[in-house]
Image (cartoon, rainbow, N blue to C red; front, side, top):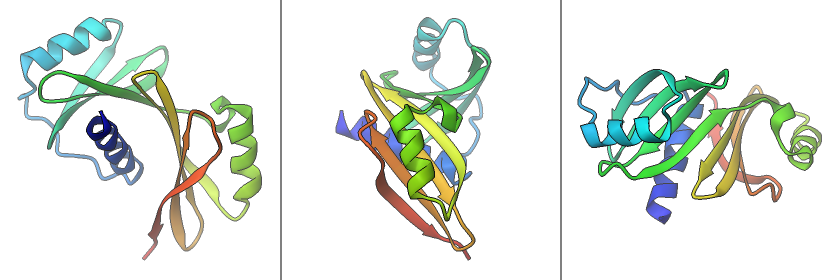
Length: 149
């Protein structure tokens, strides 16, 4: 379980950094595709990426782009979606805006895994990129800092 969450978190960081994994060359196993179609039958415009240890399906549903993650064995890891700051729980939105006045928000994700919701925020200023994380709306915690060149 912890390995799955770690894989999902790592993939979200990659997504924030816009360092996308290599595109799949059509080698997504049928059992993974079948599981995805069963769970997300309402999905449109599905695109797959094959990375080391998991598969990512990017798709549209409910006027949003979502990202579903699966293991090689077709086990569902979780789903992520880009969100607006106004879609955060009120306490997280307020804390994010009041405690980080020297930064601007460049990305927000909501990640759902096994009935647990986490939020990730990417903040930038002239010198650095900071990633924050919140588990179950319990306030923001520092996750990672990236120094700009």
